[in-house]
Image 1 (cartoon, rainbow, N blue to C red):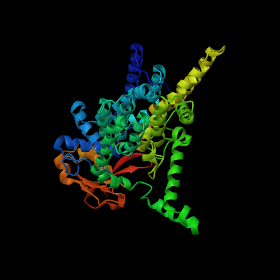
Image 2: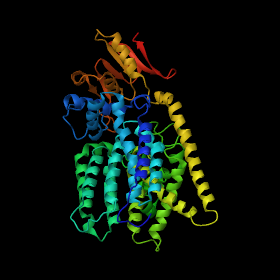
Image 3: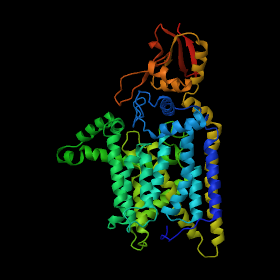
Amino acid sequence: MKTVKSSQKTFPTTLFILACILVFAGIMRVYQLATLPATLNRDEAALAYNALLLQQTGKDEWGRAWPIALESFGDYKLPGYPNILVIFFQLFGVNDFAVRLPSALAGTVLVGLSYIFARRVLLLESVTSLLVAVGVAIQPVFFFYSRMAWEANVGLMFFVTGVICFLSPTDTAKQLFSRKDVLGLLFCLLAILTYNTPLLLLPFLGVAIMLRRGLKLWKSWRVAVSGLAILFLVGIVAFSSISQQKSSITIFNDETNWRESVIYYESFSGLQQKLFGNRYVFYAKVIIEQYVESWSPLFLIQKGGSHPWHNLPGKGHLLVMSYGFGLISLLRLLWLSINPNTDRSQRPIVWAVLFLLLTSLFPSVITVDAPHATRSLFFFFMLCVTGGISLEWMWHIVSRENDNKRALQTIYSLMILFAVLNQSYVYYSYYFSKYPTESAVILKAGLNTVVAKVENELRDKDDQVAVVDPDGFWYVTVAWGMKMPADQFFATVNHHLPDRIGLKYGYRVGRYRFIVDRDDRVEEDKKIIEWSSPTKQWVINNNL
């Protein structure tokens, strides 16, 4: 990191290299996009079919006209991604490729944003910034999330753009507000309309802006911080239905955590029970433990999280080198923040970036299933991009004038290149060779093919069909696979009452009735569709 310059020129060669990196990232993200992973998961199908209903009728699956929050199967989806899909369906047709394309494009744009962040916010050299972009382009987590219809990935793109607008060098002391502040607020608005995590990060971004521009120079950040405060309050009120549903998955409303807090309380007695056994200490302990786990190599580079949709089986989210440089950069930032010899012009940047990095895990660590990759995407981005700080710092060390300068530079470059290529080869060869088959099993692909076969067999009949669906989500997959007309869907769809966390499972759509167990079939069910564990495929059985 260095002092802010009056201007930073981007040379044609740099732009050409960056363009090549973006093209490479884009190809990697759209190649076999519709079929790898093997099928849409339930969230993708819900986004797709609700978007199709919006396109056809202007209503979601509950018959609400252009809602601010789409209830879906009770998990409530923000309007950003479905509304983008309405446009993409017009441009690319109603298909799985169009469903995943917004996320793929967002992941490609994120690569370019990583260069801009490194160059304009971290003030790194152009060569280092290009290396940062390469790192984000090949990073497993950003590649993986770009190949599925993740609202979080599109929301991340919007949010990072807003952060860049706010934290880039600017002079707002002489004016009421800057164009960058307006753009920053606009992109933050788009982010909170797309995914819920950016909403929880807005207060931390506000503090980072104050640190970046100077706490005492309140005129330079009053509009930006006030705007973010308004967005936060409006978002909390407007998305209250989402907040209520999402609160059920936080550690504060989890029954298991509540029972453990009681046991923890009873493990103390007397004054210690009041001081150390109270729920505030207990939940602080849980948050700290989950925070530490989110930084662990086991989660980040070895096995990833527990959810099978968030990473390759048994594979981590980050490359080893990215994790290493990220940790070194964290130590470097901590040292610069307390070192009295740090250039005064650098301190605001250091404080702001360090604060954002350390607080970026907040939305994840307060949930019961932390560490959680989807809610940690901004943390992954910050860790990877700030890794450029140590990359540049160490390059300057090995480039100092001495007799071994050239040899040290060569060894340093080869070590990085070997580590990145080796791990990247292992990851991507697995993804394109083994994961097609594995994803078909993980996501239970093939239901729509079986449904199409049933529809062909029962073309002129009104026979009822049962689908064994213990999870309760396959109704939306069937509706999307059939591209079921809106009038037929609204006339036949039926939901169960909400469960303890507010999810409303599908009971019926069209001729299909969704049952928990095979034994729940009735005489009217002429055929049964169920997943066969031995054969790992969907099968059709007659109701004998």
